[in-house]
Image (tube, rainbow, N blue to C red; front, top):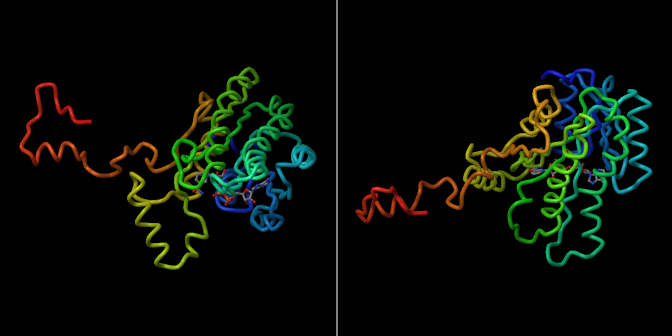
Length: 276
Ligand SMILES: NC(=O)c1ccc[n+]([C@@H]2O[C@H](COP(=O)([O-])OP(=O)(O)OC[C@H]3O[C@@H](n4cnc5c(N)ncnc54)[C@H](O)[C@@H]3O)[C@@H](O)[C@H]2O)c1
């Protein structure tokens, strides 16, 4: 994709799932990477890209760590072009979540990312093609049983993206979010066959494309948002969910009221089928 080669990206949450996929896809496109995760074993994910990537163990809830991330990027590569805020915690006890669990969720999934943008801002302003990509989730838009914190943090980051886009536009900085659907990760492959099959069956009913997404599919959407091809896209949320969020309450079923009318022998009126 145009506009990625030679650029410097900070990517958070790279010691797992989608973040690890981002390393692979950005490195393959010729970007230089500062890969960040709270998990120290994240080092192994840059093994194949050591000439292009540096791993930094850092906690986005700690101001000193945020400063260290930006310092490392500047010391190592001298510039920052892309900020990809992928890290997240899923810890959530729904209605029984404590104050500290709520604060931890928001600190990790929202505040840490916003403060990282703030710290990187002087360098993003100097870039000729600066871009921020935040990670939302389809859970930001629906009720989820037993989960109150995570979806609220994702709704918040999606909203902040719009304000970021507006306030940073004058510096040419674009800010967008991506909204992955169910994304296949290594633990899905490690699950016992019967669990994996249940998951697969459910996925095929929930997504128009009848399957889960892959980390590469999400990473390619993020690459696109950072690339020159997306030069007029800001303040948007890109759905990378196989059509999940566009499905109505009937899911993949045929339009049931129409079927009922047909079965009952009721024809359409001149103004069309008035069923909802
Ligand atoms: N996997 C999906 O199906 C899916 C669906 C919708 C949205 N998302 C979003 O995509 C992103 C990646 O998801 P994933 O499933 O790969 O997550 P993951 O749990 O596999 O990886 C998240 C990473 O963030 C790191 N992290 C958490 N808190 C941190 C902190 N305070 N400081 C630094 N690092 C921290 C974790 O150590 C972990 O390696 C997340 O933002 C998630 O909300 C994922």
